[in-house]
Image 1 (tube, rainbow, N blue to C red):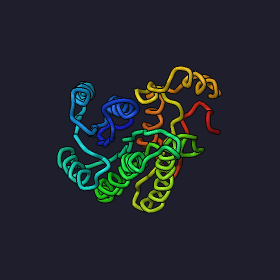
Image 2 (cartoon, one colour):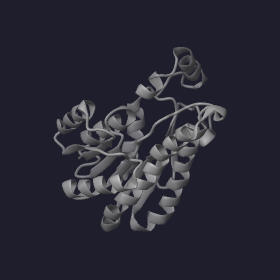
Image 3 (tube, rainbow, N blue to C red):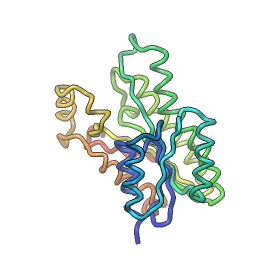
Length: 248
């Protein structure tokens, strides 16, 4: 039997990168997948078709994860379309990197709203379905930068550190109702986002990693699969680093 047979998951930011890798692996394991992105564009359509090809139900939704009312509406629609929510993967995220002395209020607010407030929005909206079922798994995408910090990323680091505190608190709030809450802290993962880093800087990053390479989105997805499945039935309130020993 497949690990997520008959379950339904929401994956925010699921059209590309780590989010898409998670959605694809979940679909392979029998999970119905509702995924969101800011726009329902060609990339979202392609991902939707790719997921449906696995014989599960998949649907893309346009949603601004940083806006609470928008989130409530899309989660309500997902519950109507799929019947319930078993797994929530809060993956939506952006970067606006710069040193604090150059950082604008807009750059700070945008990163906090998309990365951190979106986790509050979707968790609050999706918890009702999980509370009714007395079962669920919430998986929040943090970062090793949220654990150890990084120069030039104070906004991103703050957002990802906040996710860790939120994750641990929700694990304690909802544990008695059979709902688990965990975070994944990826290190240097090769995605469209990290591809924008200059080659020389990317080489320096890779040289500093004990495993001497960047990680793949699929390697993060495997950890998400573990946390979504019953294999992790007694794992909650934890942060799992996926970083090639970069942050130990």
